Image 1: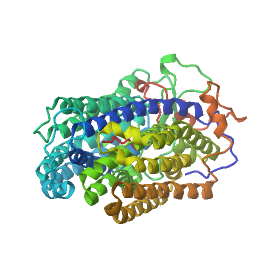
Image 2: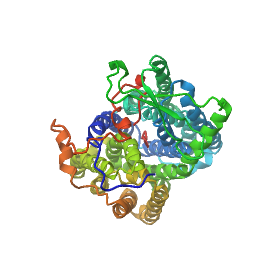
Image 3: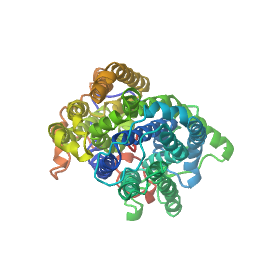
Length: 562
């Protein structure tokens, strides 16, 4: 990483306008996804007895947690490398896709088999003592016949069969963001996937078609991952067709390898400054051919080694992040039973709103932050960080305040017995207000290359959460889990905030905070005096270009929640 230069003037608008476009695209998907997931929660809570709903919530959370571990953070690795390579042919991108997918697919298949074979003992832990079903809603017949170990084992086996598809779908959708577009992420994981889950699961529950078929609801919940996988794969092929028709219309600029001494993709084609290429080709960047002395096998091995040298150390951090996001629901089920897990999940489901809003902005900002920090362009990084933070506050604080105040009435939408989660909602609201005021601190920390510090922070947050859950959940149930989760979230955000503030002087609020709001009033972003094109503007100016232009990029993800 280049030395950071605090005195360098930002280039153009520091990527603020482009961040707004990419961020708004992510937010559009976040709104649809959050709405669909909330409705799905209501359908399950009102259509199932509380304990059966808790089993569904726990098993799907466990499935997503395992999927997050199995991804090995390869999605972010693909964003990193595809963002820096403009493939003239599909095989150029596939040189990174193959080494990324191979270990992920193998591990997913192994995990699928292990979960399938070990479903019975795992189901006994999740189900707890068998209770008679207690209907909590108004949608007619209870879809499951109580959370018996046999029912839970069937749910686990169904999710185990879908696990490889879920993992690979998330990976390929992440890879499309390396092409410089938020469109597939917004359409596929933000809209298609949650809407299809709501339609399929809602139909089964409301019609009673899942009665006596424990596999039906988890199958309907996981089925949309298959079309998402196929459509993302097709999306990744689109740049090839466009690139072949525009070759030669831009000059080629030689750049060094991504890492000294490694095999990489060498030539980047950028538009000539001062020229006016045809409108259909503006903003497109293509990759030149590698030196003819390198055969395909050597280049493939070099690409694989280069990819995992970058991604390998981050795989553990991605796994830790996935565990932190899902562990609380699983712990409540293990320590207090599935019925209490259902109450906790319903009361904390609004945190998905904050996670998805943060994700929508992070997916647009992360590659820009990486390039700004790699160039040593600290003023641009500061502008992006402060801009994203104030947007997070403006968008989410009214939600958290409203939810904390209205929770006793809002939770009644889930059915009888769920209004007891009002105190959980209050803890959630206050905690998320503090967390969003810190901004995307972990994204900034990892963009600066401090992945070891990020991992240590996450491990600290997990240990704090587990320790407090073990102490508080048995006696206080869902409220104890909320307090443990709150302490973990505060540790996860305040530790990196202290680190980036001390190392780089980056703070979530500052001189760029209020000017950034001009974008929401329709005004142009403030423009600094220096208007030199920094290298990262190749990324910034291409965000809104359609994916057919094989443009530059714009990480975790997304997580699709239960």
